[in-house]
Length: 188
Image 1: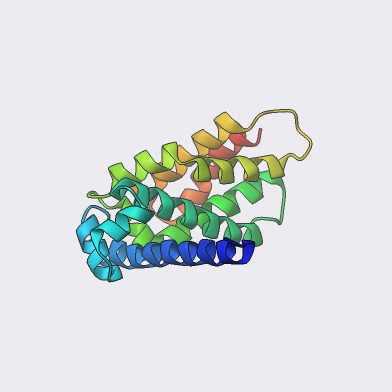
Image 2: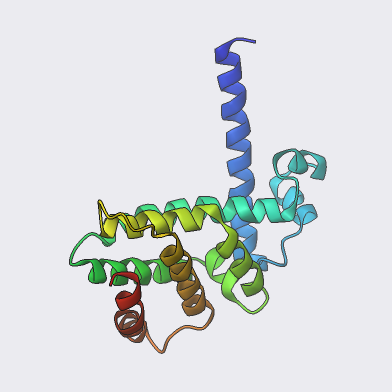
């Protein structure tokens, strides 16, 4: 097999995997997280369950891939909004942007309804992608720092999960709570 044929097959496999995640996102928006089964996803994609299982060995694998892809997309949007001001202001801008983006997208927001919040919390806490995004953001607040931001990143993810599953009274209320309780601990 030539490199070109291998590249073509890889691109085709990647495109199929992304198509599955696109359809999963639509189903998460309409049916909720727990309402999406492998059978329903295969039907919506237009493939057999066997084909679906070649790309994702379980429902949890689909969910994890969706979370990873979504974290990357949200991180790109946050990067454009959270670069002005001091580190505390940047942190508040980043977190409030994440909260807004998740709440505005039904597929994301459904993860934080009572039937999906346990799955969301479990995936967010163990997701390498979410932890990496949070760690990289916190590192950008203090470039050149020798302090490992891993624990602060994990804690920040838990704070965001809390605000998504139990929102403040308003976005301004959440920003005030972040300024009072999160910025002093995370930024210093």
